[in-house]
Image 1 (tube, rainbow, N blue to C red):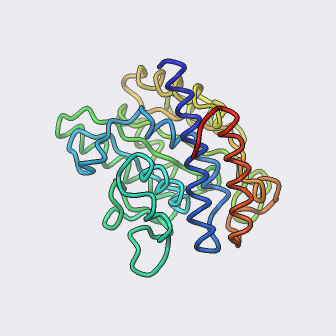
Image 2 (cartoon, helix red, strand yellow):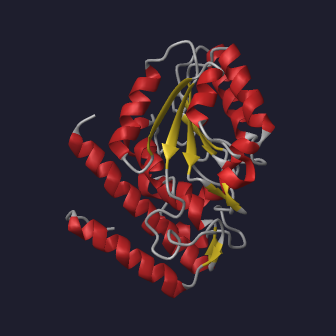
Image 3 (cartoon, one colour):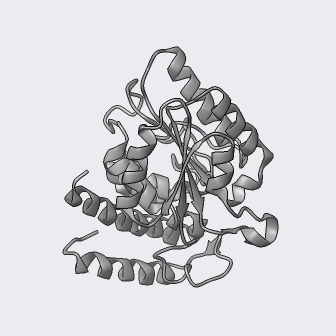
Length: 282
């Protein structure tokens, strides 16, 4: 992929953060930390890596995205809106009565959501099921999966990892948002997950670890993953919880926060300054 396209993905990540903050600022609270940390991977997926058609969300030939860490739904909605699935104005209805944008992803409500989020850990099972369904139907669609590192404390994750390796589910590419924090603190203090990439590799997965805030590294890793025939792939993203949000990134516990309109406006202004430096507007 050329450098201009990579640059556009980096800009898209900024815009995803801006739109997510606008929505949460209107609502007054939200899962800000884990929404900010996946902005780049969403920008890569919706900015050119996934086969999608926003005018036809149910297109049979599309790639699928399963967001197992569904509390990051607000940033997924922002990516969908910016990709053209629905107007960005709808983002301001986030988690409001009658909205199509609930706090966690719901495929029956939101255009472009391929799989409803269940309890943490369940997304790997549904992603594997979708990938195996594609195989049975002789389709070459890829299934992308986003997991949280704290979520990887769940035993269901490792049952899925073992199963996918055994059945050589090679159209499955998982990302682990390794932002090193979960609801109650650092993952290393709650249930240490040191060496996540190595753990997946021991189960037989093609495994990589990259800077999760570098669109170019993520794109290159996806390209390598697609060459790993006969086994599933994982890309561990080294990320920062709350990345790019001036009131959340420095805070130790930023999993879920109250967010005033003034806080959101300040963070958006900082992000828009960054965009202006590269000659772009949100």
